[in-house]
Structures are given as C-alpha cells and as structure tokens.
Amino acid sequence: MYQQDKIVGLLDAYSPPQIARLIEEVGVRKARSPVLQTVALSLLGGAFIAFGAMFYTLTVTGSTLGFGPSRLLGGVAFSLGLILVLIGGAELFTGNNLLAMGWADRKVTTVEVLRNWGLVYLGNFIGAMGCVALVHFSGMLSLENGAIAETSLKIASAKVRLDFGEAFFRGILCNSLVCLAVWLSMASHDVMSKILAIVFPIAAFVALGFEHSVANMYSIPLAMLDPRSTITLSDFFANLLPVTLGNIVGGSVFVALIYWIIYLRGEGKGTSPGV
Image (cartoon, rainbow, N blue to C red):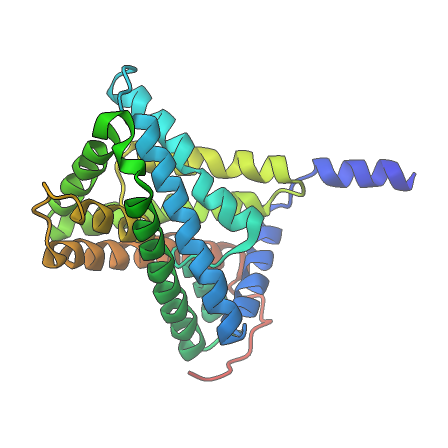
C-alpha cells in the first residue's frame, strides 16, 4: 500500500494553491540566506544562463529550417539555462522576482527582498561576464569559419537597436514566461516532469524575441569583443536598464502578485515584520 501511495504521489502534481505556498516558502528562505551562499549560487546562475545562450547561438547558426522553426529549436536549446538553475541549484535574478509573494504576505521585508535581488543581480552579472571571457579566449566563436561569431554579433546588435519601450515590454513578457516556468516546475515531483515544465515557456519567450536581463549580460558583452562590433557600453546599459525593469514587472507583478491575490491574499497567515 505504501509503494502504491508513493507512486500515486509522484504522478500527482501540486495544485496551484499548493504551488503558491511552496514558492512563498522558498522565497522566504532565499531572502534570508547567508550572503556568501547567495552570491556563490548567483555566480552559478549567471553562468548557467550563459550556457543556455551559448547553446542557442550554436543551434540557430546555419539553420535552414526557416525563421519560426529555427527560433523554436533555439528556444528549446536555451532552456538548458533554466534547467541547470532549477535542477542543479542556483540563484537567478529573474526567477527571484517571485519573492514578491512573500513580500505581499508580509513574511519578508522590503529590505530583505532588495538585498536578495541586489546580491543575485550582481552575482549573475559576474557569472555571465566570466563566461564571456571563457568563451572569448576558448576560440569557440571561430567555429564554422567564424559563423558563430557572426550570429553572436547579429543577436546583440538586434538587442541594442530596441528602444526603451520595446526593451521594457519585451522584458515584461519574458519574465512572465520565465516565472511561469518556475511556477510549473514547482508542480512536479520528479526531475523529468520539471524539465518538461520548463522547456515550453522558455522556448516560447526565446522564439518570440522577448528580453532576459541575465542572458543579455552575456550576449551583448560577448559581441562587444568582436572587432567588427560598434556596440558601446552605453548601448549595453541602455538595453539592460529597461529589460531589467521589465523583468521585475513581469515576474513580480504579472505572476507573483497576481497569484498572491488569487491564492494567498486573505489567508491571514502573514504578520508584518516591518520594512
């Protein structure tokens, strides 16, 4: 009987209200994690997303499948990044926008949320930049007679051409899907189900051309190292600012706060720890 119950438990997904509580509990723990642990996991998070971006670049280079199918295949490849974050264990700024659920329930303070976001954002940036250096010096960009480098430059150039509004709204759409991927993965009990839950939302945001701040921390600086590049630091930060703001709105408001209103508001379990 025990074995049968165990099998049924593995097949049953958590319900949306259960997911909301799980994400809130995880967010409270994240907000109060030690600084060293948070930063170390954040370095991994930036590197893991960079791996996904590397895989995407390789996958779409030279593809003859056509615009839509090539981007879809590239999106599936990019899913590697969040799979590594959620299954392998890492801290990712965009996913941590879900801490807004615990904040709305007054289980974490504004200071604790901003502390976590600041540390994780910085750690992600350093991790992504570390991968920029490793890829640049590895010679990987010379694969296929430099086709990888050309694709990388095209990707970054398209990103920095976006105006503030376009980058902001693409950031909102992106992190809505990223946080939904995290949400769906929390419903699963086993690794394969978690991976499947991650792939479709991530493939969708990549294929649709939405903007992810941590991915851009890798993609744009890498292209800036290309001798043919005209991208400047000003261009980079002009993209990163609106994308980051959009990511915060998409994850914190469009996912975390909406689901908090639906499932957790009024439960009466939160008590204010102050701000």
